[in-house]
Every structure is written in C-alpha cells, then in structure tokens.
Image (cartoon, rainbow, N blue to C red; front, side, top):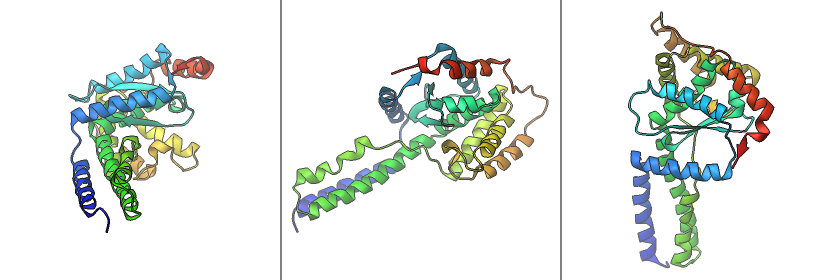
Length: 271
C-alpha cells in the first residue's frame, strides 16, 4: 500500500474536521459566514435598489424585530428581482425576498408572515445548523475523492487537493420538520406582538397552494407538508388572546410597492 502514513494522517484530519463540523457554529463564525455569503451573492446577483421598495421591506422587518427580543445579529433585508415566489435566510440575518413573493402577497400581513418566518430560521439558529450539516456532508464526499486519488497512486499534493472543494460548498436552506414548525411558531408569535394579523401567514400558504395546484413553492417545499403547517398554525392562532388590534392592510402602501415593481422593475436593479 502506498503512502500508509499519509492515509492515516488524512483519515485523522477528516475525523477531526467532521466532528468539528457537527459542533455548534459560534455567533462570531456565523457573522463572518454571513458577510462572506452576502458579498459573494450580491456580486453575482442583481438587487432591487429603489429606496421606496427597500425602505418598505426593511420597515416591516424592523417592526417585527422590535418584538423578537435581543438578537446577536444585525438583520438586513434585500429584494431580488425574480418572479419566483421565494425567500431565504442566509447566515447571520441576511434575508432575501424575491419580487415574486411581494407581488403574490394580497396584504401586508401575508408579506410580514414570510419575513417573520425567515427571521425565525435565523433567530433559532437553523441556518447555522444547516451550514454545519453541509460541511460534514461535503467533507465526507471529499474524503471519498481523496481516497480514490490515493488508491490510484496519486501523490500527496493531488490527494490533498481533492479536499479543497469545501470553500465552494453551497449554503443549504432546506429545513427539517422540527425546524419549519419552530419557525412557524416563532413567526406567528412575532406577528401577533408586532401588531400584524398572524392569519396572514396562513392565508398566504393557502393562496399559494391553490395557485400552485397543491404543490408548494420552493421556500415552503420542505417537511412537514404545507397543509399540516396550515392546520397547526390555525390551532396556535386560536389560542392567542383576543381584543388586540391586528393589522391586515397598511393603507395601500403594499399596493404602491407592487405597482412600482410591476411598472419599473427594469430600472430598479444594479449590481
């Protein structure tokens, strides 16, 4: 067998790396990851820069965050000019909302529900957990590549290079059943405390189910099924105290934003 010492050292390094990847990601590490991700993503992707649009989305996010308790991250809300009904949370509170989601919302409570749900994934550290899982998965995949290189008689430099793909790994935004439920619960409570009608999150789910013919858009397509999430959300809302003023509409401001996006989307973006 060639390079037995090297094989043992690679195996040991992989074990250390995998065990480290499964350890909780620190807040400081997540901040660094978030900064790197947003810089790279926004270098390759156009964003909506119209100040009326960006201020509107940020104002909803800020109002929700005021009721979220102390947060270790500085949240940022960005709009991506794509027609997909989608939204995702990057590490450390970088939240991206597609214009298709804004245009699909029938009222401000529906839009606030989407934003609150993404805040929940960050606040509950689901994004950090997914990053750890992705690292571990990618390390194991690269371990196989390194082993194949060694078995073929590659020198140490070429085999080590097979482990170098970690820097280019993707950021996962697919969550477990428990994580989605936790984010839904968090979002509904956050909406209620911020004065947004939490039924907006439910009605947005229902509208999308009808329009998609029963298939959920990508940011709803993880477990549990959307129908189960609707039932669970309704039960939680029924237990909320009555007599609190909750907003569904915002005096036509959402409709103004939607009009801006429909009429001037081509002039709203830049790298």
